[in-house]
Image 1 (cartoon, rainbow, N blue to C red):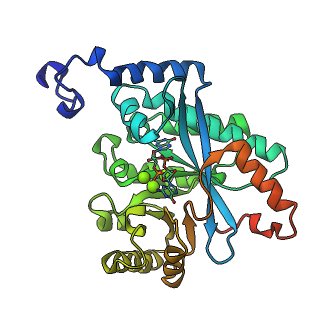
Image 2 (cartoon, rainbow, N blue to C red):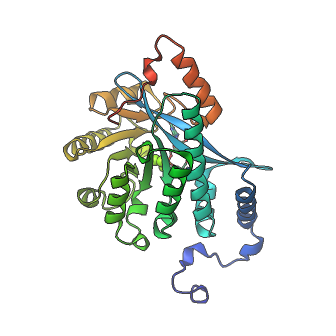
Image 3 (tube, rainbow, N blue to C red):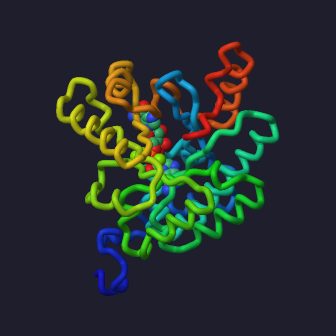
Length: 294
Ligand code: C2E
Ligand code: MG
Ligand code: MG
Ligand code: MG
């Protein structure tokens, strides 16, 4: 029963079956081992592009778990497990350190310095380790906070366990980090909190992009979000752009930035690095310049 587990433990995370022997517990133990050894975890990177000229303006780091038997396990499957079973703190810290380590390797190779955005879980916000892990990692790898963006979902921003999020976001921004709302539009009270939270960017969820340009409701929502963001001085990145039709709609609606398979799929650091080298040695290498204002 929920009572047995204490008042702060949500019932829905505690199925009434023998969890110790369930298949998902096997994954949890596997993930714990992966964290201890480190060699099954990887970050992949997906570039973000300016529509106007295709320039790469940054990239998102996406966690991958290469399971010895199951192959690549999707973060959509193992991150909720990690959150439920006390592994998200260490996992989040691993992501921070690995992203910064990779950024310092790219810098040492002389590759263009592009901002990298990492995803932050609610647990990292309310356990209060985030700021410490960020400062330690930035110092260890010699990276400027302005180069490391933080993506938070609406549910993270509204999680009461995180306390008053406004001063914390303000402090992170004062250090130089930029803050994005991820999956924008999929949560609740989207509009009221936009007034109060210190933010730089909205990432428009791909649920709204998928049926563009034909779906009139999605077209209206996307146009309205773009107009609103312009008024609020926020950048918008459209997520999950897969077709030229979607891209053309977004361009005409005034969207500047996109991320999606149409431009690039997420890939391991060495693949991304090879793409950079190919492009920078090309006469058209200009597409790789980082845009200072984004
Ligand atoms: P997200 O942060 O919204 O990341 C974007 C997801 O969309 C990624 O899925 C990416 O591979 C996928 N994507 C990008 N372009 C396209 C496209 O054109 N079409 C389609 N269909 N998908 C596209 P992925 O890598 O499976 O990650 C899923 C989610 O897992 C992420 O959603 C994020 O919420 C979470 N996640 C991933 N890495 C981390 C991490 O390091 N920490 C935390 N806390 N969460 C993470
Ligand atoms: Mg994200
Ligand atoms: Mg997203
Ligand atoms: Mg998502």
